[in-house]
Image (cartoon, rainbow, N blue to C red; front, side, top):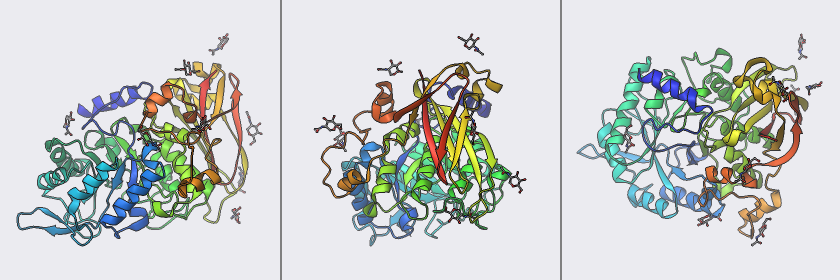
Length: 474
Ligand SMILES: *[C@@H]1O[C@H](CO)[C@@H](O)[C@H](O)[C@H]1NC(C)=O
Ligand SMILES: *[C@@H]1O[C@H](CO)[C@@H](O)[C@H](O)[C@H]1NC(C)=O
Ligand SMILES: *[C@@H]1O[C@H](CO)[C@@H](O)[C@H](O)[C@H]1NC(C)=O
Ligand SMILES: *[C@@H]1O[C@H](CO)[C@@H](O)[C@H](O)[C@H]1NC(C)=O
Ligand SMILES: *[C@@H]1O[C@H](CO)[C@@H](O)[C@H](O)[C@H]1NC(C)=O
Ligand SMILES: *[C@@H]1O[C@H](CO)[C@@H](O)[C@H](O)[C@H]1NC(C)=O
Ligand SMILES: *[C@@H]1O[C@H](CO)[C@@H](O)[C@H](O)[C@H]1NC(C)=O
Ligand SMILES: *[C@@H]1O[C@H](CO)[C@@H](O)[C@H](O)[C@H]1NC(C)=O
């Protein structure tokens, strides 16, 4: 009964701004922040977290919305005689409450990590059987977010009931602390969390771990989107396209407060080119995945900064309607890359104010002209061109056209920038919702054309490139 209520609400939310708060008051829009794992793995300590946070603030990333600083695995040192979690006092000489206090005073929220098993993936002590005690410990440290992994789960998986109960135990324990703690489930899509985790967590990983590759197949990530979600081994080393193609089947199950998590961003880590990172970032925003930066912020370059701060793309991620874009079509193409991958896709979905998002994705290996008809873009509102929206004409706003130039980005990195109002949206000052309601031009991209009633959008796209467009009724 509970499930059917949730599903009904999810259908409703696709065209309304009504938020569901399934477990707490958090993640009304997808979480944004930084997590150390993709760039640093187990090499964590107090200085890394605090110095990164200072740079996130200094580069303006905090105020565009990246609020959570999340510590991943390898921070602990077992339990004391009463079973309380202990931090590693070499890595964290002042303890965790100190880290939380420092982050809060810098205007951030603090994310912690544990595991729904006997050990974490790095073989530190896990929280299985200690959920209440560990939740209390996290709350006493003023933690604001928990990433909860799935290693060494003692075989407690295989059915939705077993897995959901294991994760719900921690969810209830967090709730019982009385502290609002964003609950980020990391069970790699095992036992289909998109069918049940809306009542358990604020987000759930839907695949094996991401790897910094656009589309390279890897035997350790054996499932592809071609098999839909029927995947018994989620694996790891999954490419961006692999994850996106899996998510396509069920990304509509996200709703405000409860999101499919396509894993942390690889933008800036060096394994993809600029077009590929733009595509990765755009699609994670379009489908409303949490956006956790995964790069070394101290080594940030101009291209990375201008991707991560793009206000018009972030406004898609943080859109108050909270409705993920849906893939409308996918075709295989013959200009494959070295990995034998070649395909093109079109995604669309509703945005605030009756606008519509369109993403045209060229995952072929050469530049091509692509187009999207209004009939396909508005397919959900009436099949075969019968939607009333198809009979309207629309302005086309290109969400990458006003991207920050390299010289300005270099000034930001060198701390010599004087006036950033042309490129930065300050979400600390004004929420994306209020900015959109006021038609803040930073959030709307650049008006580049129109599409007439019954027509199609045509665009030329580079290899592995994307067009991310906002349609607004004329
Ligand atoms: C606890 O759960 C209730 C019901 O889902 C929710 O309204 C409340 O915000 C939660 N409280 C915390 C602290 O998470
Ligand atoms: C791709 O190649 C196959 C086999 O050579 C051919 O049948 C097909 O028409 C080609 N498709 C496109 C879109 O060119
Ligand atoms: C794909 O494109 C790249 C860059 O344009 C090129 O170097 C490579 O040879 C192409 N691969 C194939 C299999 O055509
Ligand atoms: C779509 O693109 C193709 C080229 O790939 C072009 O021949 C065709 O005219 C375009 N259709 C529309 C409706 O724009
Ligand atoms: C489209 O708009 C025209 C002009 O307003 C109207 O005559 C026509 O019935 C509309 N068609 C549909 C399918 O809504
Ligand atoms: C900053 O730049 C914006 C737009 O480029 C301009 O409107 C504004 O006046 C500038 N502010 C200052 C203090 O120079
Ligand atoms: C954003 O606005 C807040 C609140 O007014 C202010 O403290 C902060 O310095 C601003 N951030 C930037 C990057 O200008
Ligand atoms: C924002 O733009 C839309 C579409 O042009 C318009 O209907 C609305 O009144 C505008 N809102 C404000 C506050 O200017």
